[in-house]
Length: 196
Image (cartoon, rainbow, N blue to C red; front, side, top):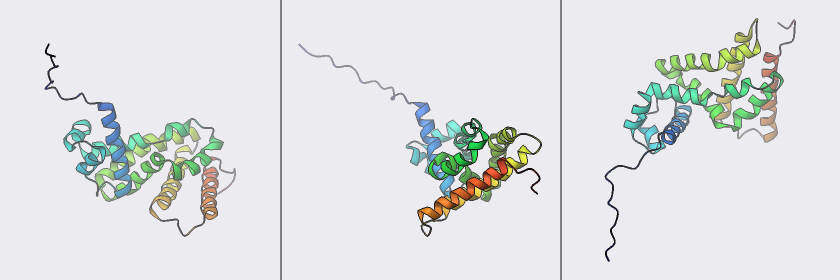
């Protein structure tokens, strides 16, 4: 008796669009944080994600749309806002050097400055997703200003850690730098009354 083999389907294999989007966003965060908006192309990101540039553009519309989606995806503020204020500085000092997404968002912002369109998007997204919520957490009368001060410290700290080699510093010295950063952020989070 002859076996009847199932017919091959002409239908392409079903894609997992959620997994594909996640791979694209991960590749975009890596690329934009390492080489900046101006020096990163959609084809490069598509290759890193194992997909086509056509699909990247179908999902995100444009390179700037992809940049905004990747930046929003990398913003760690929701986790930070859930912490007691006393732990915010310590969490930032330990998370930024070790957790890639926390640092990637800040590197994407810092490295967007070379492209006016990307710098505008980065400033808007950073204000919406970081400065405003952390400012609200810090409270009145000057929560937004203190949030911006923390942001300035963060971007400088991360840029230094990620783009300037710390090989000339011992582990103990790098730890000292982290401790200084924690103290500096805590001074902004809990300013001493009467300090100028």
